[in-house]
Structures are given as structure tokens and as C-alpha cells.
Length: 236
Image (cartoon, rainbow, N blue to C red; front, side):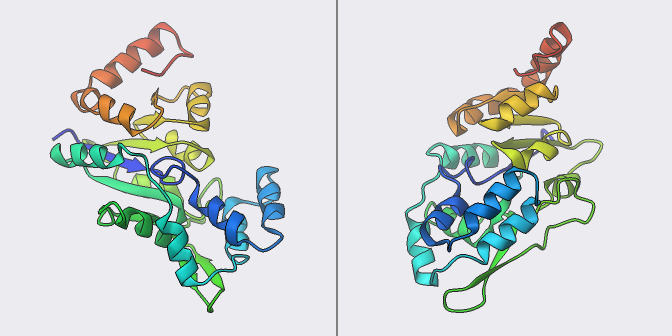
């Protein structure tokens, strides 16, 4: 047993698109863009942004399900999950997105058995929705709907190590609290700028190729060597 637990962001990491963005673009009432701009400018936190945006969704459950049925995931993700299972590596979806959407999309790939920690989407009318935050934390430094750092902390221990796989702002904070990161998108620059041990990936085909080296310790050893030789270059 390697002692690694694998935590995977969903939107833009497992999924090809940001699912919430696609819902807002298709079903959002006017005003959701204002909330998005306020969040990006730092005027509101992601918790309040998401809550406000979900309240502006105008869609029936059937429309939601039909939309989610059209969403795709990274083609190599099922292989990555199978490889993790073969090596008895616990794997969990850790997302600041919508739990119902994640389970629905994964079900089309027979992967809805994966544990998911995310915000809870609730119907409050035929075309009205509310977002609940069972995984929020008053101590969350970035006030996210799902505190990824708090969730990751539950897997930490003397002989336990955590890999985070992510792509964007919701993964910034937790990346500094885990043992290693497979980073794509904006997360690559963040890890590099903050000297966080990581390996850049384009998708799960890269993650799949790197998994044996991670489990054997070769990847983290190579990263430590690179960091010692060149402090600003911490990627494998």
C-alpha cells in the first residue's frame, strides 16, 4: 500500500467544461454575470457568488438532466480511476461545484459510485434552485462553499499522503496543504509561483502515465532533487 489518497477537482479537471458555467450561460437570469465579475474582482467570496448564481437559474429538472447528459469528461479519466483501483488508492471527487451535476455526469460513464464532496443543489420550485453548503467551514481562508483544505485534512496522517488533481482557483489553497499536485490550467502557474511540489499535466492521460512514479516515490524524489538544484523549478 502506497498510502496515497487521490483527490480530484471536477469542473475543468474531470469534466471537459465548467459545468456551472454552462448552466448559467444556458439557464441563468440576468445578473449572474455581475456576480461573476464581483467574485473575480474580490468584492464577494466564492460561497456568496455561487449561492447568488444558482438562485438565478431558471430551469426545470428535465431541462437540467438533458443539459447534463450532453456534458463530457476527460476521455482518460475512467482509465485513471481503474488504475487507482488496481493499486488500492482511494479516490474522491472534491469540488466547489454542484453535487447533483457531478453525480449525473459521472453516471453516464458508470462512475457515479465515486465519493463526491461538493455543494448541494436543491430544487425549491418547478424552476427554482438553491445551493446548500454542507462542506463549508467558518475557518476557510478563502470562504469557499466547499472547504477543500478541511476535507483534505481528514485524510492526513503519519503514513498517509495526499495527491490533489486540479486546474483553477478553487484548488489554489488546498494545493499548499497536500503532499503533491497534478496541476493543469491556472494551477500550474500557482504551484510554480508558490514553490508547491507538482507535475504539470494536460489531462488524465498524463496523470495516468505519472501514477506509477508517484506511487513508487520516484516522482516526489525527482521533484525534491529538482527543487534543490533550482528552487523555482519544482515540477517533475
